[in-house]
Length: 228
Image 1 (cartoon, rainbow, N blue to C red):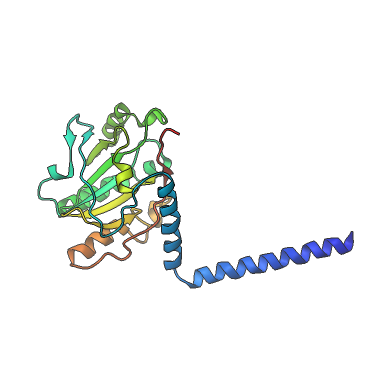
Image 2 (image 1 turned 90 degrees about the horizontal axis):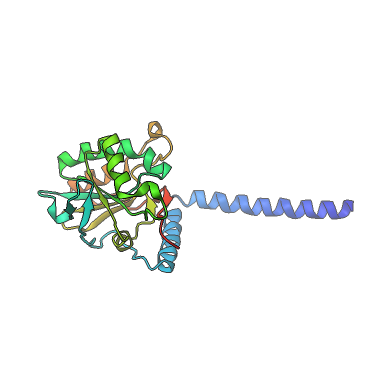
């Protein structure tokens, strides 16, 4: 029995050592390898769900969706836009709620520069009742959303973009070319701990005639709710 115990302990120590080495190697390889793994995982997931994997450099599709004012809206309706911060979000996801104030601030700061937030709720209200159109209208009034808040009725738009989370940002330029995909910033849980405002950084780069760096980050949030 004692001999068996030491054998098991020895194997456990070996496994722990191997795991530690692997973790260290991943850290040493910078964030680039992590991003590539995330892209691969996302690609596989989207393929299984029959969702398009929109990439940086692709031209994003336009759409015609009903806004909280009851009117149909498309990107083409936004006059004099230099770009669009298309953000898939919702009323019910804790992460989306945590980002509401930051999304308002982002719109107020960037719309003046020609980059308005266009928020889209992709969730199926039959699956998540709190994401119904009426609930969207009420939430927008409660928070005084200054940006367009549209309903992806029938869930036809989010698959064309390859959105998987709420929130999930797709920054487009005036020609609807995708310039950045991912998170709004680097601290989902704590706005006071934000060190990198990815969307604002990307817009600053575009304004300078440069390519955003990074142009892709992992979207942190809830999965989009759809019928099984």
